[in-house]
Length: 494
View (tube, rainbow, N blue to C red):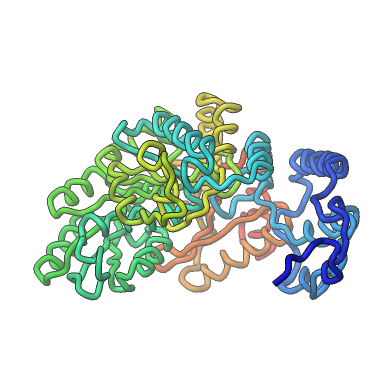
């Protein structure tokens, strides 16, 4: 077969310039326009309706069904972004976004994300990105020290706590169910993972994904403050052991999703040592408060855990996604996931860290860069003061609920989330539940605030979480006013 050359009839002649990237000068102009838009957006995000008013399908119906055959101008792309995409955004950056735990996209974090996108590295092993690898080591070690975790803990970054917990429980399986290493769970003993009934649903997903099945997790009841009952946990473990079921791991939650309750880590660690189990601590939301001295008592015993997860993208002002998993025995993670084909083998394999060995993903984004920017810009004390202020505002809101005769708080407020309900005299059960859902919908429909709900001991309760950098006391005052107005519209007393 003869060699084909560019002049051959079968290959069209195209200039190199027409097949390259966006010209640098065009990028410069458009990127400056984009940065100006972002700066204006962050400055005025409170003017948007926090919850998108669109209905399912509206955005897709407003855009072509197929990709363009020829490239379009950036002016047209940005126009559709402003006119079609933005109206369909629920604004997590909004100061009155209280529905879920906050995920502030801070200025320094956004800039770090921009540089990460521009560099576009894949830090799968040390050679593929020395900076991506070593900055992740450094930044997670900074965070470890700030959280007062012992030097035994080694950290790495995942996308979300769902994946961090999956990795931790895979390491637990590797250590406490080694029979599954070669032939899977088919020839291994029956095994169990334990968590409170208030633990996050991602734990169930991890257990199922790891092959234990739905029966592989046992949810333990909680007390009146939604804290795991250690006495019932012990009974459950002893029952399993007697039945030949092997305990593999126990998940403690410091800051549960519904109520931000705090499980008794020290007592749970005692059981793990007694029965030979992995202790994983899920503190995705509240973990950052460990750097604030007045919250340190919530974290007693965490240095006895095998793994600990915290999400900087929740309350450390780092844009989604960024979850840090700390592990006291990272060899177990590597044993569970390390698999190096010849084409990824490099001379530095035994010297530098290879992040591809710490989870399922081979590709590893440069997530450490934005966290590094955030920690350097705000500093440890800047972070502490902001956390303190968020908790102060939450306690002030809780005080208003406590003082109002027709409202009731249904859980403690250890951090910055308030769980409460409207409870007028003479109304209970399903009627009260429906009333609270109606009140929440009325408030959310105003576009001025966004709340969520949960179900506790079979009853509906409303949730208000504080954690956004842009939230001020005035926003919580307004939300409380909206709730009272909604109650009055229902004919009740505020």
